[in-house]
Length: 228
Image (cartoon, rainbow, N blue to C red):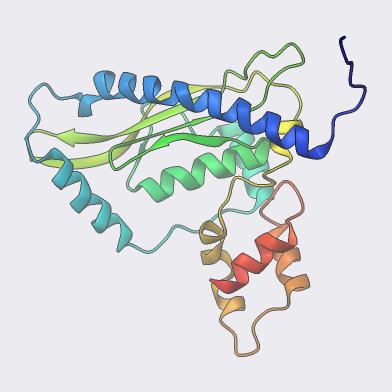
């Protein structure tokens, strides 16, 4: 006997999305291995303590002031025409690269996720799928370039950028995550307001966040931002 379900509950949708995302995660290691061989810090002779050097670089970047986000209006008016992310582009810190990827997709009304991230490379994909199950072709792959002449890491370099091939900006995969920003990434924009003696009210902070995000922020996101 075959049972045909006419409706799918929210819990079943959530479980389905977990299965989809877990199947994608099985492919992440392959992509990371591909980056390892193709990026390889673009150097044939790498020092044995490369991971230690990468960790030192990570600590050095963490001591730098966090970059400030741009308003959604600025992103849509400027980056839409001029672009802000292309192959071979360089960024001084991983935080700057992450902020640009988040802002660019915010301007397009898309939500992406990190496919992998470690001390020497990072990549993003779009979790959207078409009606027939085809995956969005969006990809961004970057690596931390190693300067063999100086024996140090230089910049974060964008190796590959593939545009979105999905059409909908609000499909099932995007409903669980309303923005590409983390609360920590938006803190520099609101630090003065949040650090006032009385603090900032949730309703006021929500309006401020809306200047940076494509969708209206959730109450939990605003609460996390206020707690930082």
